[in-house]
Structures are given as structure tokens and as C-alpha cells.
Length: 320
Ligand code: SF4
Image 1 (spheres, rainbow, N blue to C red):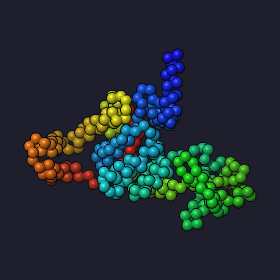
Image 2 (image 1 turned 30 degrees about the vertical axis):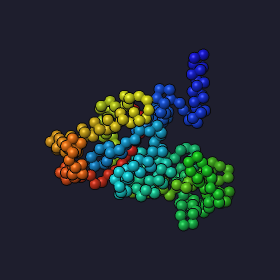
Image 3 (image 1 turned 90 degrees about the vertical axis):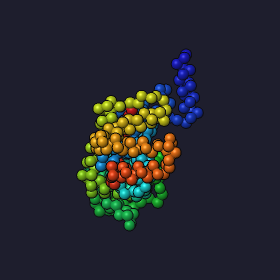
Image 4 (image 1 turned 180 degrees about the horizontal axis):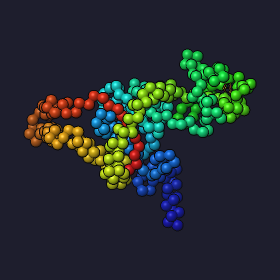
């Protein structure tokens, strides 16, 4: 009876909030796909790591999958740096047309790994997959491997996340390779998303800079390998609410960055830096000009010690 009441309450909560899930251990954690078909009730940590020193420079704790995370992290990076002259590297879990489009609109170059074409979208003979058809942006048509022109539908169709148009040709009816090209008796139909230009631009960069993409894992595994495997931080200690989990993760990154700075700069330089940083708080006690303290800090230490002028950003998922 007690269980029944408990589940009735959960049902009521779902109906009232419109949420699809209720977590009974932590109200803000959610059921998230971790890798492949493996899922957990957890939070998801997105981080931004600079490629020069492997220092995490930003992070965000969320309760959503990676597929919606890229544009937000890239926007934050742009706002921190106050420019868009950097390149971002992501694994295939982040490959989503809408996110790529948003990043490109910010003027940021993306290299996001391209996932394999799902079996359901493959042609009987992979040589006839839509990716092998030529698109001409001027005429807004595809040319199929048999040399036939595929024209777009007049109307746009809607899915939950994007709009698309259909491209087809009447030549499919008499095509000698139709059975290799399409499983449909009506012939081939290509769905072209409104975000396809961004998807194609990303592919262009991936093909053009293969050696750059290979660096992704080496850069991002540095902090996460240390935090999770070496130091055992694969969970958060503080329970309940994203804000508290975020504070936990923040402490982990601070510890990591201090350790990393110790290795990069050496003890003496780091000590001098921290002393200078501490002097920023003198005005509170000594009533000296805060502006003067900040100026002294930058002039004497900051720029000389951390000349970071090129960044690459590598958000990734981690469960805690
Ligand atoms: S089935 Fe249609 S799209 Fe495919 S090769 Fe033949 S004519 Fe071209």
C-alpha cells in the first residue's frame, strides 16, 4: 500500500511538471546515455580544455545528453576569449546539425567526428548512399551516380529538431540499379536538412585536417584520465541538485589545475603567482586602491607566466 502511494505520487508529479522522468535519489539528475547503449541516472559534465597546456578552462554540469551541448559550450568559450579565432574538436556524440549550425553562425571552426550512417538510412549497396550523391547549391539539386538530377520538394517537412526537404527523380522508375540504390519501390528519396550546409562544412574540415582531429583524445584525456582514473573522482560527493554537484566538480578542476600549474611552472613561479594573486585581496584589509592592485598583478605576473594565445576546445561527457 505504501509503495502504491509512492508510485501514485510519482505519477502525479510527472503529470504536473510535464517532465518525462523523476529521479528519487537526486531530483535533478536524469537518465542519460553514457556510451553506446549504456545509460545511467547521473549528471553530465561538459568541459573546455585548452590544447596548449591541457588546462580545463570552463565546465558545466548538466542533466542532458551531449547532443545538445556543443553550441552552448562554444558560445561560452567565445564570450570568455572575446573572439572566435579558435577551433573546436568534439567526438561523434556531439554531431548534430542544429548545434553545428549554431557554432558556424558564431564564426567558429568545428571538427566534430562524423558518426556512421545508421543501417536504416543505408542503401542496399553503400556506393549508393546519399553521401555519394553530388549536391549543387546553385541549382539546389542532387546528381545521382547514374547522372540523373534530383529536384527538391516545394514544401518543408518538420521533425522534432529540424526541417527538411525531399529530393527525388522520376528516372528511378526505369533505373537499372534501383535495387542497389533504394529499398523503396518508389525509388530513392534524399532528405536534406535545413542544417546540411553546416554538416557539410564540418565534413570539409574533418577531411582537410585529419591530424588535428587525432589530437582530440590526447588533449581531453589528460585531465579526465587524471581526475577519474588516477584520483578516483568518478562521482560527486555532495548529493542533490545540480548546483551542488557543480560545486563539487569545480573543486576537482581547481585541484587538477593547481597540480598542472605546479608541473608547468615549477614551485617557485607558482608560489610567486599565488602570492601576487593573494595581494589582490589586500585592498580589503589595507584600503589601498583595488585598481592599483589588479594592475600590479597583471604587470608583474600574469602575462609573463601564462602566455596562452591559441586555444582548442574539447567538451566531453563524463558521469559523476
Ligand atoms: S535509383 Fe534513382 S537515384 Fe538511384 S541511381 Fe537510379 S535513378 Fe539515380
